[in-house]
Structures are given as C-alpha cells and as structure tokens.
Image (cartoon, rainbow over all chains, first blue to last red; front, side, top):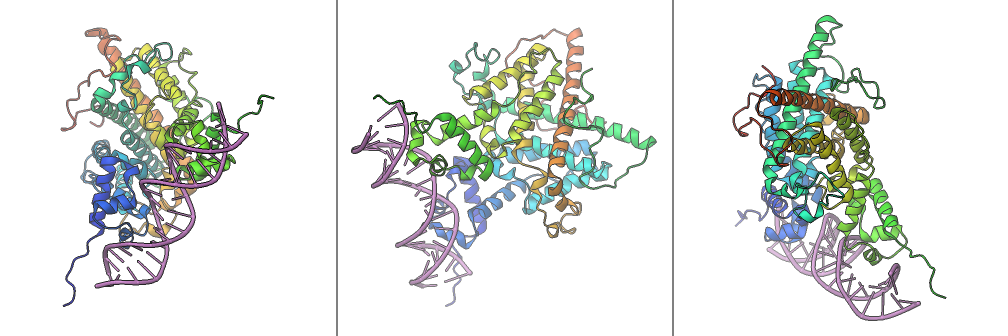
Length: 245
Length: 245
DNA sequence: ACCTGAACACCGTTCAAGT
DNA sequence: ACCTGAACACCGTTCAAGT
C-alpha cells in the first residue's frame, strides 16, 4: 500500500486558525505553540508549511486584503464614486479584523493581494486623468485614512470611568466616558464624514487641475509616480491654501 | 551616615532609554532584560518603577504625545488654521517615533497628555460653533488620518525589487520600485494633500451648517458628544453625497 | 527603598529522529 | 513528505534575599 493519507496540516487550515486566534484573543495570543495546539499538532509542525512566523502573518494579512472589493475600478464609474465604494469595502475588511491592522499597515510588501489593490487604485486614478504623482499621493492618503480608521476605535479609546475626566484637567471631556457606549456609531460616523470631506476636497483639486490644463501647458498623463509638489513650497510658512479666509 | 546615594534608576531614565531602543531597533527589541541591560541593571529592577511592561509603554507613549504642540488652540486663530497647524505638529511628533505608533493608536486611555490633546481639539471645535457630535467625529477622523500617515511609510512599503512588479500581474505598478527612493517626499506630499483636502471638505460642511442654522431651527451648541448622523441613512445604498455629479 | 539572582511558565526556531 | 520530542536562547514577572 502507498499512502493516500492526507497531511494533518496545510497552509489554508493554518491561516484560518491563525486569523481566528488573532481576532478572538489579539495578536499577542498568536504563538506558534498556541496555534499548533488549536490545530492539535505540535509546535514545530508549522515549519513544514511556513518558513517563519512572519511568513505566516504575511499570508494571514494577504487573506484579509483579498476580501477587499476591487470590482468598482474599471467598471466605468467616475473615480470619486469608485474611490468611495472601495474605501468602504477596504475599511469593512480591515475593521472585521482590527487586531491584524498594525501588521498590514506596514505596506504591500510582496503580498499579491495588496499589490493588486495598489495597482487597481493607481490605475483608476491615472486613467481618470490624474497625473501619476498625484495619483500616488491619493493612493497613499486614502490608505492613511482607512488604516487609521480601522487600527483602533476612537470611541473605545476613552475609558468609561467618568471619574477620570476631571473638569479641572479636561474642561471639555465631561461626556467622554459615554463615548464607548456608542462606539460603532461614533467610529462609523467619523469615517463617513472624513471620507466625504476627503472626496470633496479631491474633487475640488481635480476641477482646478482640469481648468489649468485647458489653458496652460498640457501636462497630460506623463511623469513619474513621484511627481512634483504643486504650488506648496515647504512645510514652514503657512501656505495660503484654500481654507478659511 | 544615612544614605545620600541616589538610586540607579528612575522613571525618566527608563522611559528615555526605552524610547531610544524602540526608535533604533523596533518595538520587538524592547524586552525588559534588554532594556535593563542598556541601563546596566538587572531585569527585575525595572519593576521597582513600573508595575508592568505595559505601564512602561504607556509612559513612553505619553511622552511622545507630550511633544505635540497645542498652543494654537485658544490663540484666537480660526479653527481650520488651528487644526492644520496641530495636525502637522501631531504628525511630526509621531513620525519621529514611527515604531511606537501602533501602541499609541489604541486611544488616549488614561494618559494625561493624550487626554489633554483630545480636550484641546474638541474644545476648539465646539467653541468655533461645531455641534458636539460633529466635533467628536472631526477629532476622530483627524486622528485616523494622522496616525495612519505616521504608522508606516506608504512609499517604503513597496519593495525596491523591480522584478516584483510584473506588468502581467500589476499593469500600473511599473515604476513602483522607485517609490522607496523618494520616501520622504511621497509621504509628506500625501499627508499635505490629504490634510488640505480634508480641511476643504470640512470648511464646506461648516458653511452649510451655518446656512442651515440661520434659517432653520437653531441647534446651537447643545447635544451629546455622540450627536446624530446627519442625513446619511445607512452604509448600504449610495448616498447622493456632494461629490461627482 | 531599591537592587539582585533564582525560578516559573512561557516564546521562535532548529534538528535529529521517526513514519 | 510530514510530524515529533528535545533542545537552544530567549521572553514577562514573582519573590525571597540582600543592603
């Protein structure tokens, strides 16, 4: 008889168990021995399927990123609508697994789903007419906002202990102890407000860009993904900006 | 003779050494034994000054938050300018210590400097005329954006290995391997673009709010820090929003 | 009051040994 | 090819003991 026996472990089973453990008990609970125990196997067995624990984490993270919907790109929708739908799907995928966000925020690295995501966003923006440098920055700032909003609950960050918020120390935080109760509403409201404000600001810039393009030197779609900085000169000295009076 | 001898350790020295270690070698390098070694002391000595390693981390984080400038609040500047200056100072403080950002993003907890920061931002917005619920959301979304932008470099997240970006897999990432070279410019450009876009979008909302307030029912400054959700109904179904056509 | 060494229950990872 | 136990160099934390 040869051996038709299936192996006890495979990458999929390990990744699924690791994600469950991280979701339920946090990143610190994910030890190789503990994970192996969940899979009824001894610790070193995992090393037959992943070179290191970091490799395993990479696979877990890429699985989460794979849940982000990218179908709105290239579906013919205007870029602001595509970006809005994508950002919501992106946030939903990360918010479902908040304990893994610090790992995933380190960048796409060599994870295929993360690279696919970056490719889709950048491609949509460039095809819509954004210069490549600007498209890069928009991809970056959207990731900043989405990962920041999924990394940790704003509301839950304020302890429910009312005695903490002494009016002498923190005159405006008298109601802060009630934030945690409304965790989901506060966090989602903040995300939605920020997303809409960001998109409004970007649409404003796009309109200015098209106006300038119609009369000045056609910059078109050329340029590096780094691009130039627009009219702002340096961080020092307040730019006139477009805000306030 | 009594004992004029000063103790070998104190909280300040420990916190300073811990921050240096985290900055130079990452969060994983901060073990109690390693830190004690840097201070020429044995591991358990630290427990005379901090109850747990988490307590120590809290002190490190609050020290970083303490570097954020809050003087623009209450200096009479309009809220968008105050918010812009604060966001830049906030990001600069975090970006100087990126390895500690995942810890700090968990919320203010009981850290005095973090609570002071939240108090100052919320107070400025409420005094400027924002309803309390909206002010809470703005504080949250600003933290999302700033922590997201400090958590990890966008540009450095793309490996410099040009062979990784196969055009068949990622048609638009042909230049992505050059991002890392321009790390600082890309990350700061994205932060500045996002910050200005966010502020533009918020100013737009503030103007709408004032218009509505002048004719409709004066809501004024009352209300809980949770507030209500405005006109958006639910996450499902695309809201008409203010973007696009 | 503050520091120490020894000890406890853990880590990630390697490796020779089994089937 | 895949899993195991034993081992290595680590962890955070406790505690009795020293001064």
